[in-house]
Image 1 (cartoon, rainbow, N blue to C red):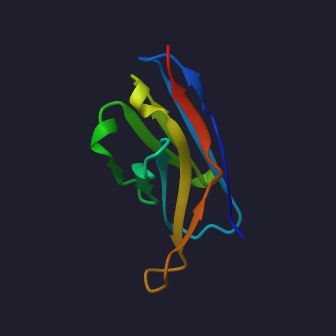
Image 2 (spheres, rainbow, N blue to C red):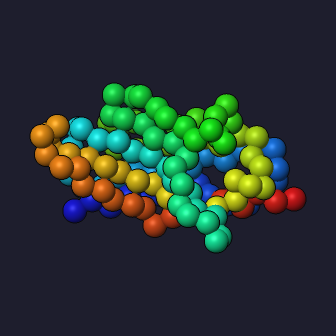
Length: 121
């Protein structure tokens, strides 16, 4: 079984920074994608950023140039450095892992419990 443990959320003023961390515990296949999603009150969960096991990244347009996703494959961990935070970034941020034994096998998906990020003065 795979578990995702997130940390790093909190309250920050507009223009400030936060760094989220997510560690995946369990048997993680080398073919995987890790990422961050967020859900604000009354809105659907949306992609923030994802990174493949080979290091390819993809960002939501709303966070490009402000957020940076990175990972440590040895630790099965993914990070989200968030700079120049805005009130509209306020949401619960979720870590997600998709992995598969090989390219011919289906992916399995796991979610973290979520961490609250609040941007307010």
